[in-house]
Length: 315
Image 1 (cartoon, one colour):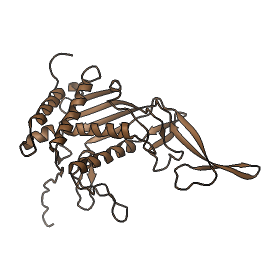
Image 2: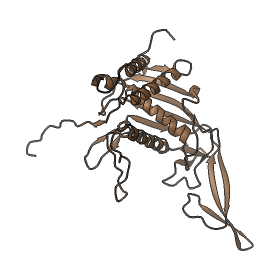
Image 3: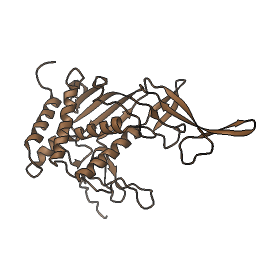
Image 4: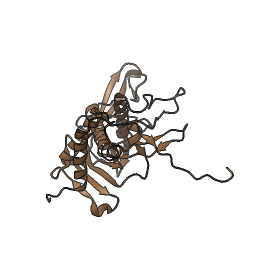
């Protein structure tokens, strides 16, 4: 690699220097905050580049998913593909854990509405404020006001390359209520001997390819997303009981590749960062930008874009 700095690398370095130099949000210029920390106005067409993090995650611990994972509430699905039963890591599981952590962080920073994410009295409609980190990064829809925004961050999981399903049987003298495990009664000499509950989990060491796309996000926003994904997936975990630990770019950087793709030029002008060519440094700087920006309270409420619509005669 030549000694000349690449575009994304230069942008990240500039952003880090900026958040270190500015003292508070009152002192900062709006255009600088938009460029380096957070793009507040939620416009679907406001992007000039993509950042793509492509690689694979490994479950370091076993991950429970019950034996009714074909249902609507299964976070890990089990399907027969090409003659083999394989577990599929649900995109919703990955997004759901990230959504929760972004909302938790927003409340701690005082961004958005503290009621964001709660359901209404009937339990039918989830309230999305459109101002917090979760709504700004992951997209939102507010049916009452009509305000909405598409997601800036997309997570895609692919067919596992290596994962083994293990089955366990748990004995119970009586039927257990409120569990995701389906019972299986065992008889001996015509009498009920036991009620077995079948539990399935993924053995440690499974590999799940992932692709994470950041669209139109400032370095500070990307850093926040990276921090919260690492917290949610590795330390808090995924799975039916939220106890499965998955690796990220922090634990296994050799499994990941970061690509910066400008809209003008596309694949021809893309920059590739691997473990050997600056990936670890870039990710650490992005997280540092987010952390310093949070300490100095540089993140603000997002704002839904309201385009001017031409008036129709006679309306």
